[in-house]
Length: 166
Image (cartoon, rainbow, N blue to C red; front, side, top):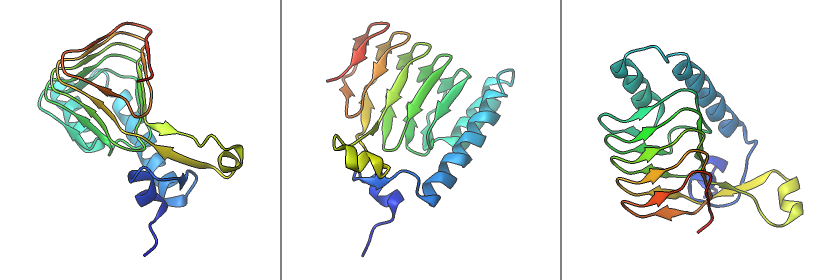
């Protein structure tokens, strides 16, 4: 049985990024991000309800300060009390897990999307993803860049402006 492009994406296999189902999912996520970002003055409870609606999982007390951007939302798992400051971007073509109590500074980018090294495959809009796992009680300084396939252990500190490649 052939896998859909979405199933291929979620499995971390090469997939066609402009597949209609994925384009629709991304548009839905963009609309959700727009709504979430306009809720900056809403109560913490109202914003958390929006997180529960738009993300795969948002633990009790998880917080994201707007503006926030993501590809799909449904691949993001925020642990209890996780905090993302202003201006974070999460490219979640596959799983992004952020552990309980983790603090993420402003302007951090967490990327799971990757591209083939073969230019012919890139020309055909093929992509793949590698999951990012961030442990419990991690501190990630502002402007850090977390690349695809990274695992950050519990209690780690990632300095501001760092590029985490392994």
